[in-house]
Each structure stands twice: as C-alpha cells, then as structure tokens.
Image (cartoon, rainbow over all chains, first blue to last red; front, side):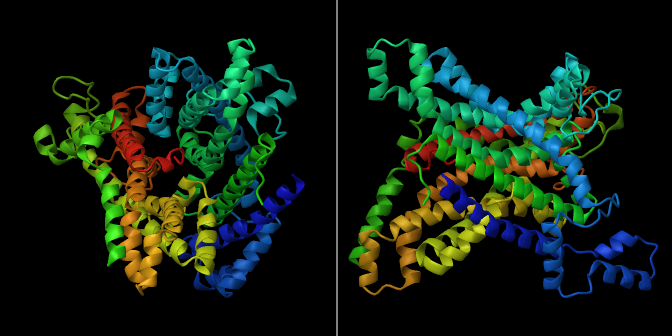
Length: 334
Length: 293
C-alpha cells in the first residue's frame, strides 16, 4: 500500500507541473496587459514601464514562468487586480466554502444514490424500480443550474422553508476557525450557527449532488443486480441468512467498487458544478471567485484559482484511487 | 486486396449492427429518437410553430403569466418565452453539432496518432491528455473562453476542447486493439503504408465507438455550453439561448418563475432525448463503452 501511495504521489508532480505550464501560458495568450489593468487609465507611460518592471513583465516569458512557479510553490500567486488583496488570501477565504459544499453534495449523492440503487435492484422490474430509473434518467440529464433555480423557486419561494442564498443569516457571525461555515459552527459549539449554516447548505448541496446521485443510483442498481445473481449470494441465502443481511453484508460490499470509481469520475463534475451552484446561491466559494475573476479579467486570481482547483481535483482523485486499493486488495497498480 | 476484403467484411458486420430494424426495436432508442426528432422539427419549422419574433420586445406584455396567447408567458421585455424556447432549439442543436464535431475530430486525430504510432508519440500525447483531464471541466472551458473572449462560438470551441481528451482516450484504446488484428498485419505485410492502413483499415473500424461516444456526449455539451452562457461567457442578449434565458430568469424566479422554468425544461427534454439515443446505440453497437459515462 505504501509503495502504491509513493508511486501515485510521484505521478502527481509531472501532472501538476503540466497544469501550471498550461495555466501560465494560457493566461499569457489572453489579450491585454496586466500592468495596464493594474494601473487603470491613470498611469503615464513611465508608470506603466515601472509597473511592468516591478511585476517582471519585461523579462523573457520563461523567466516569468519560473518566477510564477517559484512563487506558487511558496503559496504566492501575486495580487488580485480586482481587490488588491493577495490572491492566496482570497483563495483561503473561498476554498473551505467550496470544500464543505462539495463534501455535503457528495455525501448526499452517495447515501441517496446507494439507497435508491440498492432498493431498485432488490425489487427489479417493480414500480419502484421503474420509477426510480426514470428519476435517474431525469437526474443525470438535468443541468445543475436549473435544478438549483427550481429548488429555490419551490423550497425558498413557494414553500418558504429554506433560505434563498448565502452561507448563514446576516445577523450571525462566527469566529473563523476553518473557514467552512457549518464546521466552524460545530467547532464553536454554537447551535444557532449550526442550524443557520445547515439550513443554508441544504439546497446548494441537493442541487450540486443531484446529478452524481442519479449516476451513482444507476451504477449501484446494475452492479447490485449482477452481484445478486452470483453463486455466493445463493449460498448465503441457502445458509438461511436473512435477506436484509444478504443484501447489506454480502452483496453491497462487492457492489461498492464500481461506485467508488464513479465517485472519482464525479469529482470533476462536482467542482465544475460548484461554479454554477455558488453563483446561483450566492456562496462566496472558489467557483464564484473563479467566474468573478474571469469576468473581471483578474488574471493573477484566475491563475491561482485554477491551479488550486486542479490541485484539489488531482489530490481528490488520488484519495479515490487509494480508497479503491483499500476496498479491493486484489487491485494493485504496478 | 484480400485484406481490404476482410476489412470491408468487418465493416459490413459493424454497419449491419446499425440496421433500422434492430434500432427501432430498442425502446430507449425509439423514445430518444422521437424526442430529438421533435426538437429538430421545432428548430427547423420555428417560424411555423410560433408567430412571435423571439427577440422583438413588447413593453405592454412584460412578465405575463403563461396563457393561451403566450403559452410559456413573457419575459421582462415582453418577449414570448415559447418563441424563444423554440428558436433556442436551433442554437442548442448547432452547439451540439459544432462542439461535438470539434471534440470528435480533434479526439480522433489525437487518439489515432497516439494508438497507431505508439511509443514516444503516445507517451507525449497521453501525458498532455492527463494534464488536460486534471482540470475540472468547467474551469478549463472558462480559461479557454477567457483566452478567446466570451461569445457563443468561443463557448462551443471551449466545450469541444474540454471533451477532446475523452474522445482521444476511447479512440486510442480501440486503435490499440485493431492494429493488432490479422487484417491490419496482412495489409502491412502486403506493403501498405501507414496512411493507407489508417484510412482503409483503422478508421472505418473505429466508427462505432466514435458514433456512440459522440451521441452520449452531445447532450452534456449542450448543457455545459448553456452553463457557460448562464455564467455570462457564452451567448449574449438578445440571442434566444436557453442558458442565458435561465440566467435572466434567475433574477425573476420568485415573481415570474416561468421565465426560468421553460428553458430549463427544454434543455432537460433535449438532453434526455440524446442520452436515450446514446444508450440505445451503445447497447447495440458497443457494449464495451458501458460504464464509461
């Protein structure tokens, strides 16, 4: 296991280096001059030259890249053109919100997806099975931004059960510990904050997790159907085990592997969906920071956000691979 | 020539798998085809389906609820939502064809090069693919749009580029298998050059997975291009594009929920249609692709 982990960690380096090259040179292809953007319309030509020198923009592009890479390795991505704050500080504020949202969405997707998939496989070709598979087809086809709006219209507007956006009620403040609102509420032991942050998290997590939930349900159903037809399940039943035990202990364990792979594939969708979900629910996360920065042509911020998001994505995929090896000792990536 | 005959024989078998009778006995394909045919018909016959102009403003008719006069209601500029949804089908289909076509052409080129020539070409191309796949899809599309500038055409290009690695991977895998087949070996022994082998023997035999992959991804490409428009990086007003209509509808979701409801429904129906066709084709043509989506 340790050897596998070391091998996968070694692979991370070249991929992240490639990502940094692509991001850096991609940003250089964008028309416009960062120094000019920072100065605005006020600067003279001399100011512009000074700013270009200060930022190292008068250096050859490969030197600029190595300076960028050196800075990035130390967590220094420069200064935001839009807010004049250090890029890394803005990312530190936003990242925990996105991580909390994505984990909540993933938890919902896995729990609800497995439940629906297993129930559908347990009663194949029943009304429950047909109904849930139609729901699954709709679920995988629904755009996350429409799901979010519909949830807001129904639960926020018509029923008025849940808040329309934000991370918690405006009257509440929580001491920043991790930056994730719900977790900070729990750590601070403040019930009103936990309640408020939890209520604010429900709709975004449902919207973001819906597609993954549908995909997991579909996969869980088909693998459960395969496993339930195998000999060892017949043996378990023949031993006189209760059906619930056969399904939950024997079949489910073996049906989990493809689901884990699918969860890995869904991570990219979750991070992409976070951009849209955070926009709809006005959440101050990494996705919203990314789109605001792209629209404001805040290149240092875009560079930083994309690099960090790709890093998070790659590391999350590594964790899924490790989980895969842990769940199935037969799998060894050599 | 004998090898050509074998290759043609293999191709005939693959094409035979596509016979109409088999396709139309597959229930999800039939439902999907009916839905997509409906969307295509609406797009082609838009002026006959609705008498309203999708971009004409009418300030007397602002924010009207769905009624007999305006089936899906009107938006904040008094434009008929039904007309905008119907004309929006044209854009969605163009988006699907262009983005999917781009991803397929680039992906097939990369996949064939990588799979057929192997070694260093393969190593370099696949590492590039690994790097591109390390980006969350939408973020990569956002960077491409940032480089090219926000517009509907650039959003389509961005989504096409984002999907290219997936095509490249699938095509590479199939080419790796096919190039070991006897008929390719025989063609090589007969002295056929790489170009002839690729054009005559490899490409015709990778058509099935490409068709399946292209059908399975077209719906998602429509959704993601709409997503870029929703974020303000795609179609600009007053274009009747479903994603940008949803963005407008978001501002009125509590007072005029129909503005956001119908374009979203149109996206859903279109994507369900393409997904059902894709599922059907996959079952009939290439069951190996099951689980890759």
